Length: 498
Image (cartoon, helix red, strand yellow):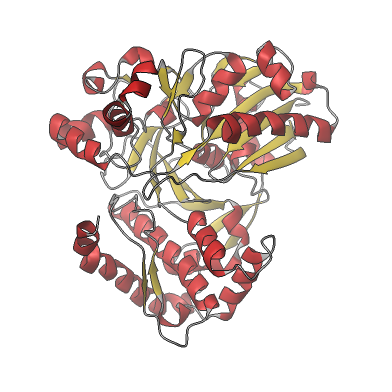
């Protein structure tokens, strides 16, 4: 129990890292910020060299220096990152273009329609466990093949963020089954393998990463990686996973029915299930370990929307304190934002409507509204989106047994309380909100056999809960009806404007 574990997670806007000892004490934390590249509406990208590997390496060195530890003290390394992403790389693992990000990038809607027609909706759902959406990687590879054929031809492989990092660390190109489950229609969920028939016409099997389970050892730190990161040559590195799954591990979500809600650049929800769930409005994947399953969902914009609001409407506030000042203004606005309703579909929407053409709407404005009313309506609009998703879980016969909240948004009392009030559910809180980097460190400890899953309760004990205020239930029930009706009445106009 005296080992030390490194966990680093690459998010949409920042990379975070932690060093944790076997009893759960965090020895050091570090973070670096980067920007979301939006070359045109509906696109979302990262520079993998600087945003992924550059920040990973810098944070690794910073953590070792801060903790004043020799590199040999690190028992194992866990990496996680945003996903599912699509990045073509050459045979040395070097990127051939910017990475195309997860469901917030909606460029491949034509390829989704083409694959739906070619393969068939029923076959897709039965073989991959999912409908094709902007979250799916296969259509984005097909988009590359259609629109950037010279890059497609040069590509030795197609990877996500975690695969890219692990290959840089170990020289081995792998992907965990949970992440591969989002590479629809390339991955067959029943056989838990790449599907030659479904991949036909998109990409060849030999250009896809090797499949592993999340905590399997992918390899060991190479001399080149050691020089870049400060880690010791030979340090074990696990296969790792997508950030949201690592975040779920950080708050102890592991038994059927237990559900995590991540407040981040997007809200992402994961429920562990006993068997394969089947609902095309949600996403399915094998869980991190053999024999377990997961049912996922995610909004397209959440933290990205609060940042958009700050950047456009709070330029008079110091950048380092702007978000706190906006939250204080929102707290002065009453529940319901004095009649304002916002559809948070500023980058289309993912679950449960899967509509890349959905648009943001601000409804109910009059000359008395203040900035705080608008910001509160942004937070409540995201909460209405969460309610829509939670209702879908219930309709799918998978009601959450617990809802564990994690992420920076839990520190925004207006936002987190609005979610509990609007959804009518408790949100359990744990001591640490570090999130995916903590989960990745924990998964690394599992990978080398030093920890068992129950140890997370010692690493990150529960400290409280956000409880819904029942006096606001009628107000928010009416607001939710308006929220749902706004989309239904305008979606044809949204489609026409696409």
